[in-house]
Length: 416
Ligand SMILES: Cc1cc2nc3c(=O)[nH]c(=O)nc-3n(C[C@H](O)[C@H](O)[C@H](O)COP(=O)(O)OP(=O)(O)OC[C@H]3O[C@@H](n4cnc5c(N)ncnc54)[C@H](O)[C@@H]3O)c2cc1C
Image 1 (tube, rainbow, N blue to C red):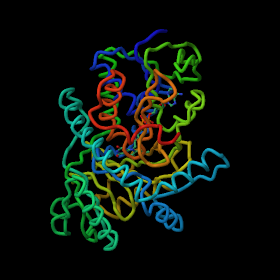
Image 2 (cartoon, protein in one colour):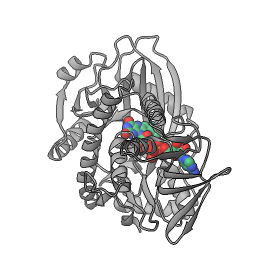
Image 3 (cartoon, helix red, strand yellow):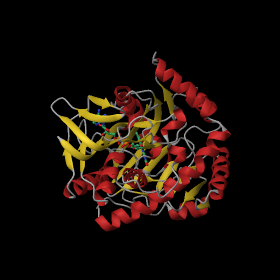
């Protein structure tokens, strides 16, 4: 089958690429190995639109913190699968080496620009398309019980402010006035007032339906299993039942990207980082903001009649079966910060795979080895947030336009 643009992967990034490409007048086909939007790592995620998350995952102090957390397995935000796999070990070494001041400096401004572009695009997209997804712009508050972590949170807030992120430090009184449902031992918070949140599965479903209505040809349960390449051009994309020929191809396969890269004979260093979510019925007094429990690195978000907690980052884990011990812990962490009524109950649990690069910065750009391939992956903790900006940038690249922001820091070439 012949098509103009072929997008591989129908997750957060693939759907956004489809939307902006269709808007620019291009014809789009999507190949998704499972079901859209259920297969996406964004389906059961925290739904936080956090342009304030501009610090790359590989930042100074991360390795030390990860080791410290692992000594306390009951509450550790971090876990790691031991896998005797040379690529995985080399990725871990590369990640540890990237946790430097230099990587932070290199990544923070590009992440800030990407986040700001996405925040603007999100507002426009949801307003123009009238998506029903409980989108709210009251910001995200990181809250603390521990004095020391609160101080560290304030310090990080000051740093973010220097990079143009709007921050308000909330003392106990102000915080409890804003959110009376908080437990008394929560001592303060740092409010990122420019952040927002929404129900991610409702958002993805709306986007999926919109791109279909705009004319996208969508093939679900159709994994890509191989390629034919001739003179540096991908001439065929193979599935079990069909072959596709496309003018331009977009690789947006999230945590699975390095597997497809092998067949493309290019190195895309992505490893999965599994995380969990637990969804609860709404308390009578519903939360008005999105939260991060700063002492535990757990996100808590209200949408409609669902309250969700997400957490854990388990490196190198490909299974999406939720670990019930962690699901119960997430529920308990939430109860330790908020006063719920007795009838608040767990209604669902889920696990998803974040796609992570060794420097914690996404990959967005043209393939250096294939004339008709664009790569958009590696968004780690912020692939929902950065979706609309990435979609716009990919559309600009494919259409040969100047990109709205400088994408040099995102190019794959940094790993080659
Ligand atoms: C617990 C948790 C909480 C999170 N919270 C947030 C949050 O609050 N805010 C935020 O911004 N981000 C959050 N994230 C991160 C975000 O969900 C991811 O960064 C994002 O989903 C990545 O988007 P993607 O399109 O690259 O990958 P995905 O959304 O995973 O999509 C990739 C798609 O490619 C498909 N695919 C794979 N291989 C093939 C193949 N061979 N052929 C065809 N299709 C294929 C997959 O089935 C999948 O549907 C969270 C993630 C987790 C796990």
